[in-house]
Image (cartoon, rainbow, N blue to C red):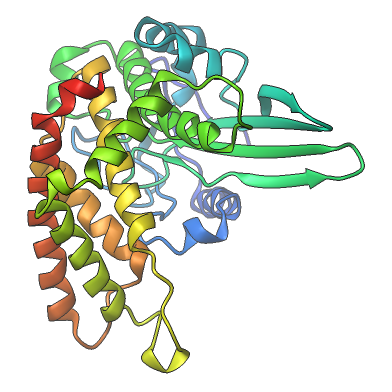
Length: 331
């Protein structure tokens, strides 16, 4: 049955059974690591309310037709802020299909990077850049990295955004461009890590590398030491690694880099598009996320786990404040 289209740019919601099938298809496209993350529940944001509830909508709700956005306008917004990021997505359509974004030859091997971008409502996270799939073809002497970015413009009715961009079409385009800008920074940095030696790096990769080095330096103690200590404590509290299983893998450096990675990407995105997040908000969101990446909240000892997350949030804010004091040297 075809959907009934209305002149407001909204579509009548699917019948309930079709909603369930559509949600199942979205869920099936997430990687196993994404499915384990508690925020990644495939949900739909009804446009009936200024502040959408993140629930499956009932058949009576109207769902915004995301197809009203203009892809060239989104790319133009990104191009205004960064030629590097524009070149990354220039040939990529936002249809969930993979497009070749870079290819270099090093010795007998060709290194390729593919990117897929999909725009959809799927939960409470603004966007996701998944860890790339690595495909090695010995027959064709190719190493291919395949990235997937999901863009979720669920904050369409944010008060500050509505006041800034009143037109609904332009607001969607602005929000998608902002989220995509942020996620593409993650892709560029990972691309820089996998690029064979001898090839030029982007300013994003070089700036982030400098910031990460600074964040690991003695100049940022005791803030950095406090953050790492709380991450280590959360690892011991995690039920995923019981003491009887032997030595726990040290994920502290990985998660510390993740926290610096997000700080850098958010800072660059705020500079480009405005609507900035305070360090208090960033530390609150990402302290909890880092804790969950370390492992789920234990059934026993939940109170101790939550207190440790609060301590991590406090020291992470202090760390971000110290980075901001020195951020001018990274631009």
